[in-house]
Image (cartoon, rainbow, N blue to C red):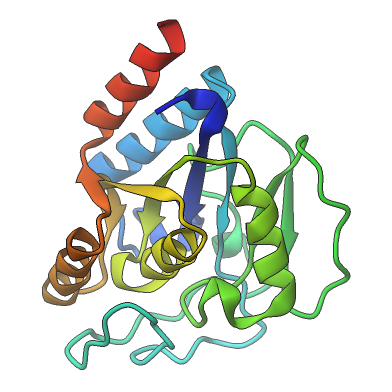
Length: 218
């Protein structure tokens, strides 16, 4: 992976999903791996963007419109990421170095550039390409990218949506599995198996960092 042709896709790296939050999916070790990836992204100047949850009302819970693998066994997500609450903010170690623009559905289309980190507020409830504006922003993030590294909260929710969007754009996709948290382990295993069938590289944070640092110095 070449850092200049790599995209980091951070999914729902928000306080409500971190330890102590309203929907605490992420444990301490996973949070540390996310922070490590975010730090490496800043140091190697890797393009960064992602997906976040941003709800005007509490999300539906147990049956979001996941596009990869449906599961009837996954429990409902606890209420989370209500607009204007601290729980919707970035978790410690989860914010990128670049200034962030969050693009909510129905908002005015931002001027797209390379000096901001763009996050589409599609979250756990919808695929990235379900709305024209979010699809356009994700097109911008993925333009010229060969590889993408996906990490964060909600393997069978937001991460599944991110992987779908990247594969749709023919981006070589890697998931940092020890920097990814699931709602339901059994449902997540179905999603991960589906990713592998579709050619997604499921690796550890340390392995992906070694690949990036090796190509950065070669």
